[in-house]
Image (cartoon, rainbow, N blue to C red; front, side, top):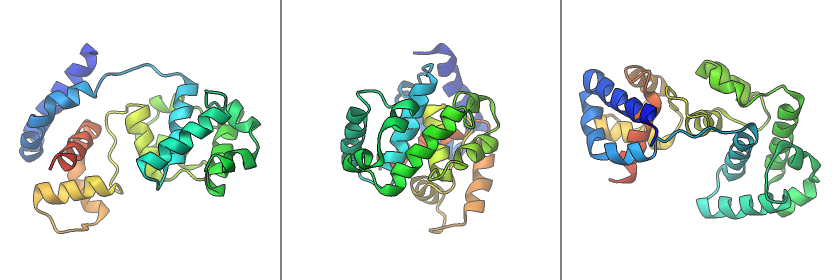
Length: 212
């Protein structure tokens, strides 16, 4: 386990204890599980590309269907999904793997942006969250939710919150006894107190929802 990251989990819990006792108390039973999920690993540009391509592939699909299609895409790329491999594949080949026409276009546009230097996935780790989201969202087919998930899970950014995520919304409504479908602005206002540990807070909220 990364010592630095373990300290990060402790720092996040200590912060929540001060600013949000409700979420802090809810997080405590899941602390060890979250520690185990918090190991940092250095990733290459190709690894980040593959993770983003996989996210695009799985949009609006069940986990089982997404895994099946992704495996076919990876096989078509001869085992490694890279910008170069995607660019070389013809659209009918990707469609045969199970991708929709829109997702084929999105993967092609993503690989083109990376190869041209318009989008540098490694440099996104150094940009403010909003700027990183905007750069990702500039690629055809990548929406804000996909960009936010990429920042959280692939880039492991520590202060990201996705107010459009239904799971986070429902967990917050349940935990704080709020009315259903409160406005995203209200969710954002609640999340501000968790900064600079909003990613950790989000993981807590997802974990609560998955275990209740």
